[in-house]
Length: 293
Image (cartoon, rainbow, N blue to C red; front, top):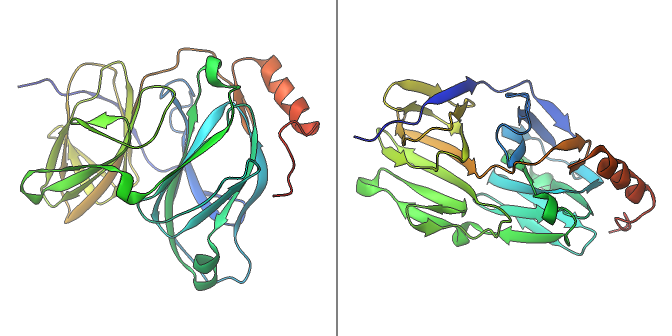
């Protein structure tokens, strides 16, 4: 029998806060581990747990703001989110969809509740990740990927125990649709009651799981519930997850670390203080482009 990959730390949802007037989020990363390198290439994880928004005649969200040096990955579970950026990209994502924006050398974008969702009100449930870029790619051209639910790589588990929906990377021989700059596995796993899955990630990949729904048993003994984040040690071994509730859902984040300096300030993530300073200078001098989009 293979060794189990051991758990380094489990932490609960940090206190929530509003981002703009439309997103009530808890910042799991880097708050829960206090080190932006520990789960590299994942820099930030804002989790928007299910929250009901009443109908509104004005759209809630976040206005135009800049980014440089990384990618934003927005994953929708309930509700609809809309995106615009000043490179001409526009998209709406709903349950099961993902938008993957590469800010790279610099972009301005805005994100908000989709028009009809805002008018009607409803439950919004989503995740936003910041994924770092290696130094050699930080100043490449920005780009945008709209990844729809039907494009995800799907692994059906035996005996209707559940399924794996792969956004990026490869799991059990099935690939996800996202194009990435480094090796990153991001996938959602849904399990039925007592459904079980065994996952295998390279020991040098930084790996964590966020439980989004229900309660699961990890490695045969550790019970984790909704809104727990499980960080695994970087050792050889498989990860066994069993659903202890009628349904459970969790997301796996696993990636090859980028072993480079990280300097972060506001909306910019670079390798040096000088590069951060230059990002602010470029933004003030409209090098990121116009806000009129």
